[in-house]
Image (tube, rainbow, N blue to C red; front, side, top):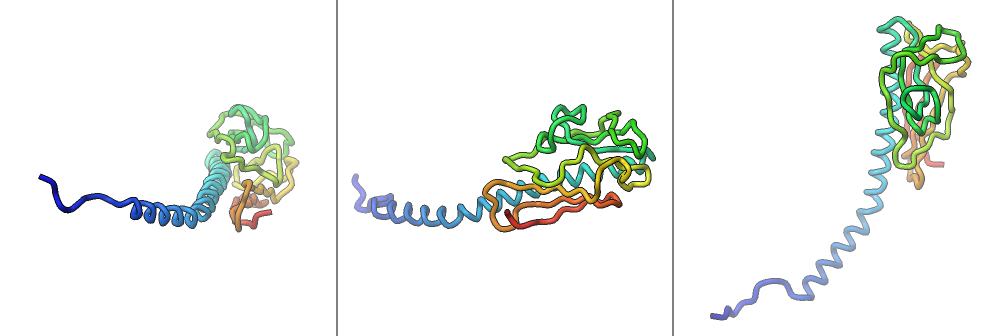
Length: 176
């Protein structure tokens, strides 16, 4: 038996629905890109902050120098900050201008999503047992890392600053 009523959509209804969907995607896509950029930068800035906070905390806990440096292999102070970084117990005493990698406490992978550091590029930052940075090690303070992402919109870039007292903080900065 054939029903008098047809079920489904007509071609006109499908075309109108598709047009509405395209308009919604066109409006939502730019704001989604900005959200993704912002989340990437927040994650990378938090990784830097975590590393500096860990180094400072471990220096106080151990009452010994603990340093952070750029590391491409996760075991030595080689490479750029974009390659990754490590926190380690520093075998050299305060005031020494070189870092001596002892026990590696934690390893961070490099910056994701084509993010780059256009700020300072210190060899290492050493914390002494009191939790302040070793200003006699040859690094000038404050140290400022400027994380930039290609195609940045509004204020998605981040600036991480390590003060002479050892405190690390991050803030949003406008795109270049």
